[in-house]
Image (cartoon, rainbow, N blue to C red; front, side, top):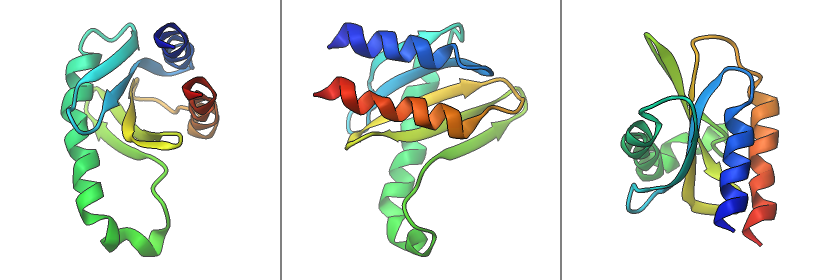
Length: 119
């Protein structure tokens, strides 16, 4: 299964505009696997879990907006995107992107195919 996850992360990291991505355990904050050219993707991913935890603690305050699809953070030199692993809220998918437009609908659609790898 680890090989399949890595192959899927590799495919996601090759998506236009994506520099790197990783799968992170939300509880421990440890990276399970990562892919892409961005050298600090694992360090960034481990730190990014904190943003996800804040949302989890404050979830009830955002209920009027519906379920969360994607957290986007824009920095001077790039963007950071966080989304839940399909069917397993204990896992987080993190992407580091170039400061340009990314087809987020397409990327999320491909990312959500990870559910097939879990079974």
